Image (cartoon, rainbow, N blue to C red):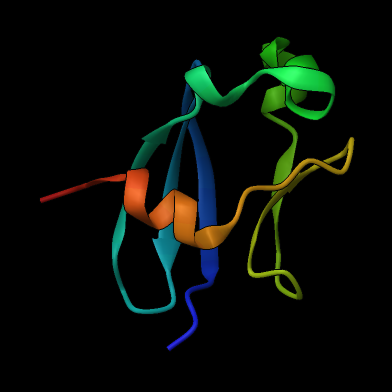
Length: 81
């Protein structure tokens, strides 16, 4: 089964709540991932909050073209009990 993000919501700071196509859901803090040419600008929280789920890519994307592999998000999220 290929993993896809099907729902995502901003929580706080650099934390996003995610739901995947297998039913798993949880939160991920991306603060430590925001480095470099593509992700560095997302340290601006106003820009960070402007993500959406791209159903074609199956993950979250930002206006500047940044995206993260759904597998990475899945492995690093904290599952909510």
